[in-house]
Length: 111
Ligand code: HEC
Image (cartoon, rainbow, N blue to C red; front, top):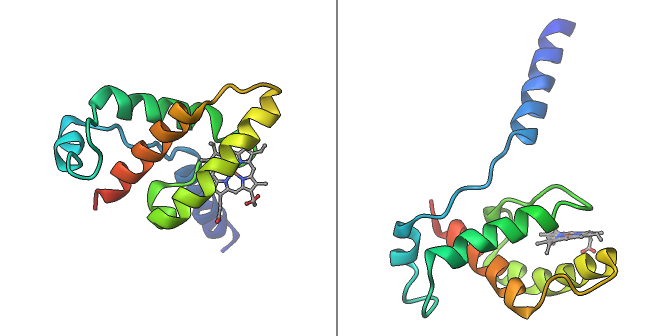
């Protein structure tokens, strides 16, 4: 009985800790051209990199579909400020903020 619970718990733990953010593809670019003008694969790849290397300093990375588009648009600006405050300098600018948002909203569109 106890063994079973341990197995279940460690499965839950493992699936959380090994969660990998999805890699953007050219297909994502094609699908989102009307939503974001001049969207590029490089932008999306950069957005992913910036997100995964700066947004897990205080909490785990939230999955793109954990929040609605409106919630993301609202939460990212204050979170970027938090990153800069923690770093003690403006390591993320408005440009990086936009790249994070773009990556998240594009991946969120995938079903
Ligand atoms: C300095 C610590 C810190 C950093 C760095 C940070 N966060 Fe947060 N984050 C928090 C705290 C604290 C909360 C909980 C409540 C709040 O302040 O909104 C939170 C909450 C969140 C939530 C949940 C909001 C909700 O409505 O449930 C999301 C999504 C989020 N952060 C995204 C990000 C993103 C994206 C970045 C990178 C740009 C980031 N965080 C970087 C501290 C941080």
